[in-house]
Image 1: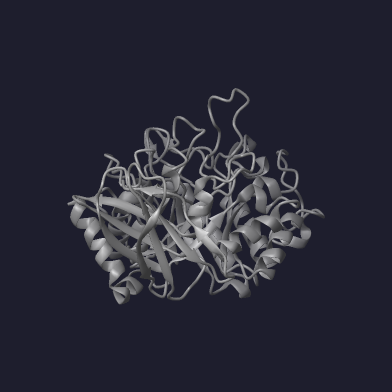
Image 2 (image 1 turned 90 degrees about the horizontal axis):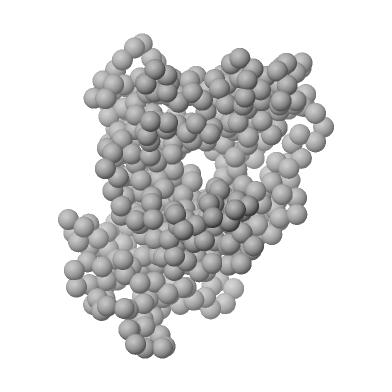
Length: 461
């Protein structure tokens, strides 16, 4: 089955018109949350992202970080739906990001999310428990009014099926976060649509993380919950149909690789994105979500060393990412895939456990990983019986161009030319080669500025 899948994928790539139909408008996005809100690093980071050929970034907007007196139990006075009513300097960092992104022709997707100000929670305790939908709607309206002309895509709440962003997740053993998220989403949707400049914007629902357990609501269970459907996708309750322009999801996998299939049927990693497609179709047929919703993989990455628990080797990171991007590319329902992060999160003081993610293209100290050069021209190599199936993409040029595939056989020190191929109009190419143990491949091509670029060594997986 895996052999057939890989070969059919290659056939889709080699048949240029078919590949074009598969993902004619699939967008590549980038997320570098710390750098893009850092006065000293926003410009250089945007330049790097634009240099990769990426013209879309996603930015989380933590409500707590922009709210007045976020640790107070008393709600501030004033109209919180009016951006001008917020304290001076509230929007400075976002203003700078918007200005500099616009200058470079980069669009910004905003995700207003928790943690939240204490005065907006139930019981006025903490920063996560049952945020007020009404107050959240006012915050989102303020964002829409300030950035309405600059933002065309919104994604509502980051990973609402995770307890670090929304609480409670379960109540008496049953999922509760989907019910509350539904209210938050509707308030945000109403707020965005109330602003004239945003009435045609894309608004994405979901933003779910890939896997669940007794503390995290499983993503497909969460989807059914917000759509008021039971386990068989039959209507329950008197919920109305939700309006949405796409479904956002974070299809992270494990160190086992992008083809790893989670045993829990309500989990959705990149290998089984078809599960999400089927779930959305069933929710559409039930009349609780729009039919044929596109999928936006708004956050994705492959973690690497130095994280020894979740990370793969530095050499495998670009290889695994390329395979994941290929999976997304050939799925006609996937409208966007993202890279998260530019730079790894910092290690904890102990140096043993790592916080956040090590999915960056640079290490935390700024040194480039092999994935940095690999991101210019991802190359996926998968073994299918006695052949290696290659899929690649030149990200920075949106026209047909020649690409040279080089090969280094086991025991050899130098690379030699395997074949020169011509990409399709999306910069995508594919070919097969006889599998030989220990073989490495790499891509060589000339950029639009005349610079010769060489990708990192990639082995078959």
